[in-house]
Length: 256
Length: 167
Image 1 (cartoon, each protein chain N blue to C red):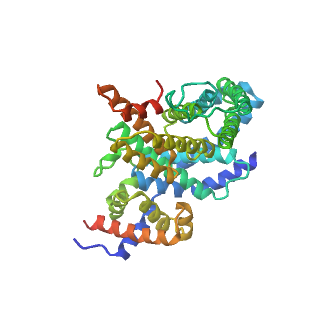
Image 2: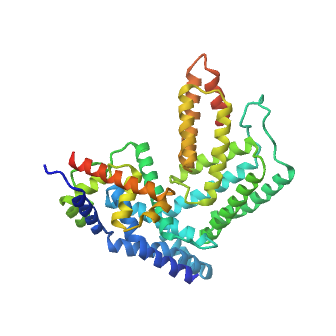
Image 3: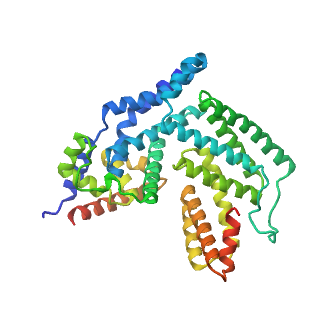
C-alpha cells in the first residue's frame, strides 16, 4: 500500500470541511435555544399561555439544568450547617470563620433559599434565578478567598460538588463561578492530603491530582480525590489491621 | 433583550457548523455530535445572557465548552461501560445520515477515523488549523500555549496521523 505523503494528507484533511450538520436540525436547535427566552417573556405577560410552553420545554436539558441549579443551591445552603470537621478531633489546624463572615454567608443563603423557592414554583424565573445563583456563588467564592476557609466548610462544599457533578453530569468549568469554588475546594483538599500519611499508590494518585489542578482541570481533580477517598474507605473496611494511612485519608475526605 | 437574542443568533449562525464539525470529528457519530453541540450552544446562550461585560471571544468560548463537553462524554461513556453504536467502526450507524455514509465510504472516512486515534490536543490543533483555517497564534491563545509549542504539536500531530494511516 502506497504511503501517504504530507501533501496528500493535508488535502484529505481539508476534505473533512464537507462535514456539515443537518440544516433542519440546525434551524430546530436555534429556535429551541432562542425561543426559551421568548417563552419566558410571554409567560410573564400571559401566565395561562406559559402553561403550554412549560409543557413543551420540559425537555431533559431543562430538567437537568433545574436539578443542576437546585443542587448548587443545596450545596451553598449546606455550607452554613455545621457539619463534621474535615479532620479528626486531634487536628488543631482548623480555623473557624469569624462571626462577621458567617453572617454574610447566612445572608447569602437566605437570598439563595428565596431563589430556590422561585425555582421550585415557577420555571418562568428560572433564568433570572440561575443568574442570581451565579451571583451568590460568586459572592461565596469571594468570601472564601477573603479568609481562611473552615475545613468543615470546605468539606460541605466538596460533598455538595459531588452531588452536583452526579446530577449535572457535565464539566462545570464553563460556569466560571462554580469553577472558582472547585479551585478553592481542590486546593484545600490537596493541602489536606499532603498532611496525611499516604501509601505509595495514594502518593501517585496525589501527584496526578496536582497535575490536573495545575491544568485547571478541577472537575477531574476532584473526581480523583473522591476516588482516593472511596478506595481508602474500602480498604480500611476490609482490612482488619487497617493501615493508619488508609483510615486517615478516608476519615478526612468523606462523610461518615 | 431582543438585541441579546439577535447578537447570539449571529454567533450561532457563525459557529454552528464549526462547532458541529469539531465535535463530530472527535466523537465520530452524528447523533452524539448533535447532542453535544446542542449542549454547547445551550450553555453558551446561558453564559451570554448572564454575562454583564459580554463575551469577548465567542468562538474561543464555544470551542472551550465543546472540548469540555467531549471530555465529559467520554468520561460518562467509560463509566457506563456500554457499547455504543459509535463503537462499531466498520458498519454505518443505521441512524447515520446519507452524508455520513458517503463520507464513510470515501477515503476521507479513513482520515476521520484516524484523527480520533490521535491525542486530544493534536486532534484539536489539526481541526482548527486545517479545517477552520485558524492561525497558529489564535490556536495558541485557545490552548494557553506558546505559538512555537503549537507549531511543534501540529507537526507531531500530522506525523502521528500519517503513521496511523500508513500502518
